[in-house]
Image 1 (cartoon, rainbow, N blue to C red):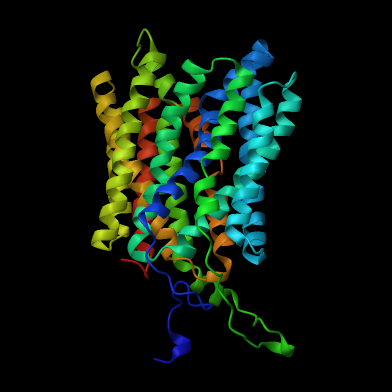
Image 2 (cartoon, rainbow, N blue to C red):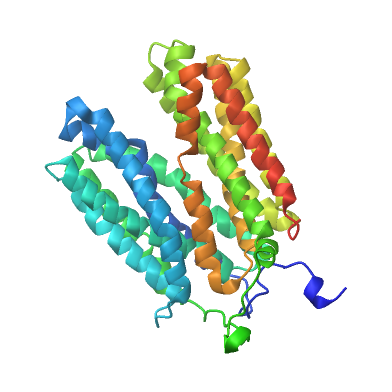
Length: 419
Protein backbone atom coordinates (compact mmCIF):
# COMPACT_ATOMS: atom_id res chain seq x y z
CA UNK A 1 0.00 0.00 0.00
CA UNK A 2 1.37 3.42 -0.92
CA UNK A 3 1.92 6.13 1.64
CA UNK A 4 -0.82 8.22 0.06
CA UNK A 5 -3.32 5.45 0.67
CA UNK A 6 -2.65 5.14 4.36
CA UNK A 7 -5.42 6.43 6.63
CA UNK A 8 -4.82 9.72 8.37
CA UNK A 9 -3.49 9.41 11.89
CA UNK A 10 -3.67 11.95 14.70
CA UNK A 11 -1.02 14.65 14.90
CA UNK A 12 0.76 13.70 11.67
CA UNK A 13 -0.09 16.82 9.70
CA UNK A 14 2.67 18.90 11.29
CA UNK A 15 5.89 18.51 13.18
CA UNK A 16 5.23 18.38 16.94
CA UNK A 17 7.85 18.87 19.67
CA UNK A 18 8.79 15.74 21.60
CA UNK A 19 6.65 15.46 24.74
CA UNK A 20 8.24 14.52 28.06
CA UNK A 21 6.43 13.32 31.17
CA UNK A 22 4.91 16.14 33.19
CA UNK A 23 5.69 16.39 36.90
CA UNK A 24 3.35 15.96 39.84
CA UNK A 25 3.69 19.68 40.44
CA UNK A 26 2.48 20.32 36.90
CA UNK A 27 -0.56 18.06 37.43
CA UNK A 28 -1.43 19.56 40.82
CA UNK A 29 -1.17 23.17 39.73
CA UNK A 30 -2.97 22.32 36.49
CA UNK A 31 -5.86 21.04 38.60
CA UNK A 32 -5.92 24.35 40.51
CA UNK A 33 -6.23 26.19 37.20
CA UNK A 34 -9.22 24.05 36.30
CA UNK A 35 -10.64 24.62 39.77
CA UNK A 36 -10.67 28.35 39.03
CA UNK A 37 -12.37 27.73 35.70
CA UNK A 38 -15.05 25.47 37.18
CA UNK A 39 -15.85 28.03 39.89
CA UNK A 40 -16.75 30.48 37.13
CA UNK A 41 -18.75 27.94 35.13
CA UNK A 42 -20.55 25.67 37.58
CA UNK A 43 -21.77 28.05 40.29
CA UNK A 44 -23.67 30.55 38.10
CA UNK A 45 -25.61 27.81 36.32
CA UNK A 46 -26.34 25.83 39.46
CA UNK A 47 -27.27 28.61 41.90
CA UNK A 48 -25.84 32.13 41.53
CA UNK A 49 -27.79 33.24 38.45
CA UNK A 50 -31.06 32.05 39.95
CA UNK A 51 -30.24 33.86 43.19
CA UNK A 52 -29.31 37.00 41.24
CA UNK A 53 -32.53 36.92 39.23
CA UNK A 54 -34.56 36.61 42.44
CA UNK A 55 -32.79 39.62 43.92
CA UNK A 56 -33.19 41.78 40.79
CA UNK A 57 -36.83 41.00 39.97
CA UNK A 58 -38.64 38.39 42.08
CA UNK A 59 -41.72 38.49 39.86
CA UNK A 60 -39.76 37.64 36.71
CA UNK A 61 -37.01 35.52 38.24
CA UNK A 62 -37.67 32.41 36.12
CA UNK A 63 -37.58 34.28 32.82
CA UNK A 64 -34.55 36.38 33.76
CA UNK A 65 -32.60 33.42 35.12
CA UNK A 66 -33.35 31.32 32.03
CA UNK A 67 -32.33 34.16 29.72
CA UNK A 68 -29.01 34.75 31.48
CA UNK A 69 -28.13 31.04 31.42
CA UNK A 70 -29.08 30.75 27.73
CA UNK A 71 -27.17 33.94 26.87
CA UNK A 72 -23.93 32.63 28.35
CA UNK A 73 -24.34 29.28 26.57
CA UNK A 74 -24.86 30.99 23.20
CA UNK A 75 -21.83 33.24 23.66
CA UNK A 76 -19.69 30.21 24.50
CA UNK A 77 -20.94 28.24 21.47
CA UNK A 78 -20.07 31.14 19.16
CA UNK A 79 -16.80 32.29 20.71
CA UNK A 80 -15.05 28.99 21.52
CA UNK A 81 -14.25 28.00 17.89
CA UNK A 82 -13.17 31.56 17.04
CA UNK A 83 -10.90 31.85 20.07
CA UNK A 84 -9.51 28.38 19.34
CA UNK A 85 -8.60 29.49 15.80
CA UNK A 86 -6.93 32.65 17.11
CA UNK A 87 -5.11 30.77 19.87
CA UNK A 88 -3.57 28.35 17.37
CA UNK A 89 -2.26 31.21 15.24
CA UNK A 90 -0.84 33.42 17.97
CA UNK A 91 2.77 33.28 19.16
CA UNK A 92 3.32 35.59 22.16
CA UNK A 93 6.57 35.28 24.08
CA UNK A 94 4.75 34.27 27.27
CA UNK A 95 3.35 31.22 25.42
CA UNK A 96 0.22 31.11 23.32
CA UNK A 97 -1.80 28.84 25.62
CA UNK A 98 -0.66 30.58 28.82
CA UNK A 99 -1.35 34.01 27.34
CA UNK A 100 -4.87 33.12 26.29
CA UNK A 101 -5.56 31.34 29.59
CA UNK A 102 -4.35 34.27 31.70
CA UNK A 103 -6.19 36.75 29.50
CA UNK A 104 -9.30 34.60 29.70
CA UNK A 105 -9.20 34.46 33.49
CA UNK A 106 -8.80 38.24 33.74
CA UNK A 107 -11.54 38.85 31.16
CA UNK A 108 -13.90 36.52 33.01
CA UNK A 109 -13.20 37.38 36.65
CA UNK A 110 -13.22 41.20 36.52
CA UNK A 111 -16.80 41.53 35.19
CA UNK A 112 -17.82 38.46 37.22
CA UNK A 113 -16.91 40.32 40.41
CA UNK A 114 -19.23 43.18 39.43
CA UNK A 115 -22.28 41.16 38.39
CA UNK A 116 -23.74 40.88 41.87
CA UNK A 117 -23.97 44.65 42.44
CA UNK A 118 -25.75 45.57 39.21
CA UNK A 119 -29.09 47.38 39.61
CA UNK A 120 -30.71 45.75 36.59
CA UNK A 121 -30.62 42.40 34.83
CA UNK A 122 -29.78 44.12 31.54
CA UNK A 123 -26.48 45.42 32.93
CA UNK A 124 -25.79 42.03 34.47
CA UNK A 125 -26.42 40.43 31.06
CA UNK A 126 -23.80 42.66 29.42
CA UNK A 127 -21.21 41.71 32.03
CA UNK A 128 -22.08 38.02 31.82
CA UNK A 129 -21.57 38.05 28.05
CA UNK A 130 -18.01 39.29 28.66
CA UNK A 131 -17.58 36.63 31.36
CA UNK A 132 -18.59 33.96 28.84
CA UNK A 133 -15.96 35.17 26.35
CA UNK A 134 -13.32 34.88 29.07
CA UNK A 135 -14.58 31.41 30.02
CA UNK A 136 -14.26 30.38 26.38
CA UNK A 137 -10.63 31.52 26.22
CA UNK A 138 -9.78 29.58 29.38
CA UNK A 139 -11.57 26.43 28.19
CA UNK A 140 -9.83 26.48 24.81
CA UNK A 141 -6.33 27.11 26.13
CA UNK A 142 -6.36 24.75 29.12
CA UNK A 143 -7.84 21.93 27.03
CA UNK A 144 -5.19 22.39 24.34
CA UNK A 145 -2.41 22.22 26.96
CA UNK A 146 -3.17 18.54 27.56
CA UNK A 147 -2.61 17.75 23.89
CA UNK A 148 0.39 20.08 23.62
CA UNK A 149 2.36 19.13 26.72
CA UNK A 150 1.20 15.79 28.09
CA UNK A 151 2.37 12.51 26.52
CA UNK A 152 -0.35 9.94 25.76
CA UNK A 153 0.67 7.75 28.73
CA UNK A 154 -0.29 10.56 31.14
CA UNK A 155 -3.29 12.11 29.42
CA UNK A 156 -5.81 10.19 31.49
CA UNK A 157 -4.34 11.56 34.70
CA UNK A 158 -4.13 15.06 33.22
CA UNK A 159 -7.76 14.80 32.17
CA UNK A 160 -8.67 13.66 35.68
CA UNK A 161 -6.80 16.71 36.98
CA UNK A 162 -9.15 18.76 34.82
CA UNK A 163 -12.31 16.85 35.76
CA UNK A 164 -12.07 16.25 39.51
CA UNK A 165 -11.87 20.00 40.32
CA UNK A 166 -15.31 20.38 38.76
CA UNK A 167 -16.78 18.39 41.63
CA UNK A 168 -14.73 20.21 44.28
CA UNK A 169 -15.53 23.63 42.81
CA UNK A 170 -19.27 22.96 42.80
CA UNK A 171 -19.40 21.48 46.30
CA UNK A 172 -17.00 23.96 47.89
CA UNK A 173 -18.39 26.89 45.97
CA UNK A 174 -21.94 26.10 47.03
CA UNK A 175 -20.85 26.12 50.67
CA UNK A 176 -19.23 29.53 50.16
CA UNK A 177 -22.20 31.20 48.47
CA UNK A 178 -24.94 29.59 50.56
CA UNK A 179 -23.36 29.47 54.04
CA UNK A 180 -20.27 31.68 54.31
CA UNK A 181 -20.98 34.65 52.01
CA UNK A 182 -24.75 35.02 51.71
CA UNK A 183 -24.74 38.60 50.39
CA UNK A 184 -25.33 38.46 46.62
CA UNK A 185 -22.85 41.19 45.71
CA UNK A 186 -20.04 39.89 47.88
CA UNK A 187 -20.57 36.27 46.80
CA UNK A 188 -19.83 37.14 43.16
CA UNK A 189 -16.75 39.12 44.17
CA UNK A 190 -15.36 36.36 46.42
CA UNK A 191 -15.81 33.64 43.78
CA UNK A 192 -14.15 35.88 41.19
CA UNK A 193 -11.15 36.46 43.46
CA UNK A 194 -10.72 32.74 44.14
CA UNK A 195 -11.04 31.94 40.44
CA UNK A 196 -8.35 34.46 39.54
CA UNK A 197 -5.86 33.35 42.19
CA UNK A 198 -6.26 29.58 41.66
CA UNK A 199 -4.58 29.34 38.21
CA UNK A 200 -1.62 31.63 38.98
CA UNK A 201 0.73 28.91 40.36
CA UNK A 202 0.31 26.96 37.13
CA UNK A 203 0.35 29.83 34.65
CA UNK A 204 3.28 31.62 36.29
CA UNK A 205 5.25 28.61 37.51
CA UNK A 206 5.32 26.30 34.49
CA UNK A 207 6.77 27.78 31.29
CA UNK A 208 5.12 26.66 28.09
CA UNK A 209 7.28 24.69 25.64
CA UNK A 210 7.71 25.85 22.07
CA UNK A 211 4.73 25.29 19.82
CA UNK A 212 4.64 22.95 16.82
CA UNK A 213 6.09 23.85 13.46
CA UNK A 214 4.41 23.19 10.15
CA UNK A 215 6.54 21.62 7.44
CA UNK A 216 6.67 23.50 4.17
CA UNK A 217 4.15 22.17 1.72
CA UNK A 218 3.46 23.29 -1.80
CA UNK A 219 0.18 23.27 -3.61
CA UNK A 220 -1.40 24.68 -6.72
CA UNK A 221 -0.19 28.07 -7.96
CA UNK A 222 2.69 28.13 -5.49
CA UNK A 223 0.47 28.00 -2.41
CA UNK A 224 2.20 26.72 0.72
CA UNK A 225 -0.96 24.95 1.88
CA UNK A 226 -2.40 22.40 -0.52
CA UNK A 227 -6.11 22.23 -1.10
CA UNK A 228 -7.70 19.05 0.14
CA UNK A 229 -10.81 17.39 -1.17
CA UNK A 230 -13.86 16.87 1.01
CA UNK A 231 -13.05 13.16 1.10
CA UNK A 232 -9.51 13.83 2.36
CA UNK A 233 -10.79 16.18 5.06
CA UNK A 234 -13.42 13.61 6.05
CA UNK A 235 -10.76 10.90 6.42
CA UNK A 236 -8.49 13.21 8.42
CA UNK A 237 -11.23 14.15 10.87
CA UNK A 238 -12.97 10.77 10.97
CA UNK A 239 -11.91 9.84 14.50
CA UNK A 240 -12.30 13.33 15.94
CA UNK A 241 -15.80 13.52 14.47
CA UNK A 242 -16.90 10.28 16.12
CA UNK A 243 -15.24 11.25 19.41
CA UNK A 244 -17.04 14.59 19.31
CA UNK A 245 -20.38 12.92 18.56
CA UNK A 246 -19.86 10.51 21.43
CA UNK A 247 -19.15 13.43 23.79
CA UNK A 248 -22.22 15.38 22.67
CA UNK A 249 -24.53 12.37 23.07
CA UNK A 250 -23.26 11.25 26.49
CA UNK A 251 -23.31 14.79 27.86
CA UNK A 252 -26.79 15.45 26.47
CA UNK A 253 -28.15 12.23 27.95
CA UNK A 254 -26.55 13.02 31.31
CA UNK A 255 -28.08 16.50 31.32
CA UNK A 256 -31.50 15.09 30.51
CA UNK A 257 -31.06 12.81 33.51
CA UNK A 258 -29.98 15.54 35.93
CA UNK A 259 -31.78 18.71 34.80
CA UNK A 260 -35.26 17.49 35.67
CA UNK A 261 -34.44 15.65 38.89
CA UNK A 262 -36.19 18.24 41.08
CA UNK A 263 -39.41 17.85 39.13
CA UNK A 264 -39.03 14.07 39.19
CA UNK A 265 -38.68 14.08 42.97
CA UNK A 266 -41.71 16.30 43.49
CA UNK A 267 -44.04 15.16 40.70
CA UNK A 268 -43.17 11.47 40.33
CA UNK A 269 -42.00 10.49 43.81
CA UNK A 270 -44.22 13.01 45.61
CA UNK A 271 -41.60 13.87 48.24
CA UNK A 272 -42.62 16.48 50.82
CA UNK A 273 -39.28 18.31 50.61
CA UNK A 274 -37.87 17.72 47.11
CA UNK A 275 -35.24 20.49 47.46
CA UNK A 276 -33.56 18.76 50.41
CA UNK A 277 -33.80 15.42 48.64
CA UNK A 278 -32.16 16.93 45.57
CA UNK A 279 -29.31 18.26 47.73
CA UNK A 280 -28.68 14.75 49.05
CA UNK A 281 -28.66 13.29 45.52
CA UNK A 282 -26.30 16.02 44.30
CA UNK A 283 -23.83 15.33 47.10
CA UNK A 284 -23.93 11.59 46.42
CA UNK A 285 -23.52 12.26 42.71
CA UNK A 286 -20.57 14.63 43.25
CA UNK A 287 -18.66 12.24 45.53
CA UNK A 288 -19.20 9.36 43.12
CA UNK A 289 -18.21 11.56 40.17
CA UNK A 290 -14.96 12.62 41.84
CA UNK A 291 -13.99 9.03 42.61
CA UNK A 292 -14.94 7.92 39.11
CA UNK A 293 -12.89 10.65 37.47
CA UNK A 294 -9.77 9.84 39.50
CA UNK A 295 -10.11 6.08 38.94
CA UNK A 296 -10.91 6.45 35.25
CA UNK A 297 -7.95 8.72 34.57
CA UNK A 298 -5.55 6.40 36.38
CA UNK A 299 -6.81 3.17 34.82
CA UNK A 300 -7.04 4.46 31.26
CA UNK A 301 -3.34 5.40 31.35
CA UNK A 302 -2.28 2.19 33.06
CA UNK A 303 -4.19 -0.09 30.68
CA UNK A 304 -3.63 2.12 27.61
CA UNK A 305 -7.32 1.83 26.78
CA UNK A 306 -9.77 4.64 25.98
CA UNK A 307 -12.77 3.33 24.06
CA UNK A 308 -13.69 0.63 26.57
CA UNK A 309 -13.80 3.10 29.45
CA UNK A 310 -15.88 5.62 27.52
CA UNK A 311 -18.35 2.88 26.56
CA UNK A 312 -18.40 1.53 30.13
CA UNK A 313 -19.02 5.00 31.54
CA UNK A 314 -21.94 5.43 29.14
CA UNK A 315 -23.24 2.01 30.22
CA UNK A 316 -23.23 3.00 33.91
CA UNK A 317 -25.18 6.15 33.10
CA UNK A 318 -27.65 4.17 30.99
CA UNK A 319 -28.22 1.88 33.98
CA UNK A 320 -28.85 4.94 36.17
CA UNK A 321 -31.42 6.39 33.76
CA UNK A 322 -33.25 3.07 33.42
CA UNK A 323 -33.31 2.73 37.21
CA UNK A 324 -35.10 6.07 37.48
CA UNK A 325 -37.44 5.12 34.64
CA UNK A 326 -38.59 1.74 35.93
CA UNK A 327 -37.94 1.85 39.70
CA UNK A 328 -39.21 5.31 40.73
CA UNK A 329 -38.43 5.14 44.47
CA UNK A 330 -36.20 7.17 46.78
CA UNK A 331 -33.86 4.24 47.45
CA UNK A 332 -33.50 3.59 43.74
CA UNK A 333 -32.75 7.28 43.21
CA UNK A 334 -29.76 7.00 45.55
CA UNK A 335 -28.49 4.01 43.58
CA UNK A 336 -29.02 5.92 40.34
CA UNK A 337 -27.06 8.89 41.70
CA UNK A 338 -24.11 6.61 42.49
CA UNK A 339 -24.20 4.97 39.05
CA UNK A 340 -24.63 8.28 37.24
CA UNK A 341 -21.84 9.91 39.25
CA UNK A 342 -19.30 7.13 38.75
CA UNK A 343 -20.17 6.85 35.08
CA UNK A 344 -19.91 10.56 34.40
CA UNK A 345 -16.74 10.87 36.46
CA UNK A 346 -15.02 8.17 34.40
CA UNK A 347 -16.32 9.82 31.24
CA UNK A 348 -14.93 13.24 32.24
CA UNK A 349 -11.36 12.00 32.47
CA UNK A 350 -11.22 9.34 29.76
CA UNK A 351 -13.19 11.23 27.11
CA UNK A 352 -10.89 14.25 27.40
CA UNK A 353 -7.84 12.00 27.03
CA UNK A 354 -9.46 10.29 24.04
CA UNK A 355 -10.13 13.60 22.32
CA UNK A 356 -6.53 14.73 22.68
CA UNK A 357 -5.34 11.39 21.27
CA UNK A 358 -7.37 11.74 18.05
CA UNK A 359 -6.60 15.38 17.21
CA UNK A 360 -5.48 15.25 13.57
CA UNK A 361 -3.15 18.28 13.40
CA UNK A 362 -0.89 19.75 16.08
CA UNK A 363 -1.27 23.24 14.58
CA UNK A 364 -5.07 23.32 14.95
CA UNK A 365 -5.56 21.67 18.33
CA UNK A 366 -7.27 24.61 20.05
CA UNK A 367 -9.57 25.20 17.08
CA UNK A 368 -10.57 21.54 16.81
CA UNK A 369 -11.14 21.18 20.55
CA UNK A 370 -13.08 24.44 20.44
CA UNK A 371 -15.46 23.09 17.82
CA UNK A 372 -16.11 19.96 19.89
CA UNK A 373 -16.58 21.97 23.08
CA UNK A 374 -18.94 24.35 21.30
CA UNK A 375 -21.06 21.44 20.05
CA UNK A 376 -21.22 20.15 23.63
CA UNK A 377 -23.04 23.35 24.66
CA UNK A 378 -25.86 22.94 22.15
CA UNK A 379 -29.20 22.87 24.07
CA UNK A 380 -30.00 19.25 23.18
CA UNK A 381 -31.08 18.31 26.72
CA UNK A 382 -33.44 21.25 27.09
CA UNK A 383 -35.08 20.50 23.74
CA UNK A 384 -35.47 16.79 24.50
CA UNK A 385 -36.83 17.49 27.98
CA UNK A 386 -39.37 20.02 26.71
CA UNK A 387 -40.60 17.75 23.90
CA UNK A 388 -40.86 14.59 26.00
CA UNK A 389 -42.42 16.09 29.11
CA UNK A 390 -44.96 18.02 27.05
CA UNK A 391 -46.23 14.77 25.54
CA UNK A 392 -45.33 12.01 28.01
CA UNK A 393 -43.85 11.51 31.49
CA UNK A 394 -40.67 10.83 33.42
CA UNK A 395 -40.49 7.14 32.50
CA UNK A 396 -40.29 8.07 28.84
CA UNK A 397 -37.87 10.91 29.58
CA UNK A 398 -35.34 8.67 31.30
CA UNK A 399 -35.72 5.90 28.72
CA UNK A 400 -34.86 8.41 26.00
CA UNK A 401 -31.93 9.70 28.09
CA UNK A 402 -30.69 6.11 28.32
CA UNK A 403 -30.98 5.66 24.55
CA UNK A 404 -29.05 8.87 23.88
CA UNK A 405 -26.20 7.85 26.19
CA UNK A 406 -26.15 4.31 24.77
CA UNK A 407 -25.70 5.77 21.29
CA UNK A 408 -22.79 7.81 22.64
CA UNK A 409 -21.19 4.66 24.02
CA UNK A 410 -21.60 2.87 20.70
CA UNK A 411 -20.28 5.81 18.66
CA UNK A 412 -16.88 5.64 20.34
CA UNK A 413 -16.19 2.27 18.69
CA UNK A 414 -16.24 3.95 15.29
CA UNK A 415 -12.87 5.47 16.22
CA UNK A 416 -10.04 3.60 14.51
CA UNK A 417 -6.75 5.07 15.72
CA UNK A 418 -7.18 4.62 19.50
CA UNK A 419 -7.70 1.40 21.41
